[in-house]
Image (cartoon, rainbow, N blue to C red):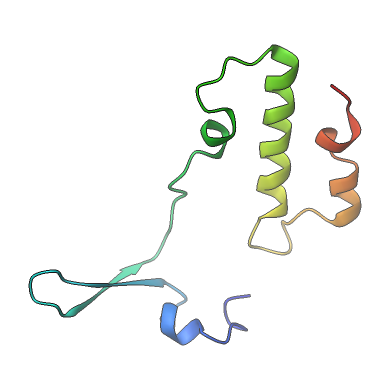
Length: 96
């Protein structure tokens, strides 16, 4: 997917490592940091639940939603959930 991107050369090097570009506040020069792996910076489950105390059935549904979103947003198309699989997912199929 990255190789087909129009702006890939602005954001990735030849080995498809992400290039984080920022301007140094002191020197005002561009600083490029090559990142070979990028770990998620947000905890989606924590964002979905927040500081709410949910009943167990609602908590289960939120976990199912997180699982579905993780599968839908998978970058690798070979690992990404298909439309039919998504429609069969527990978040869609099970009622609260």
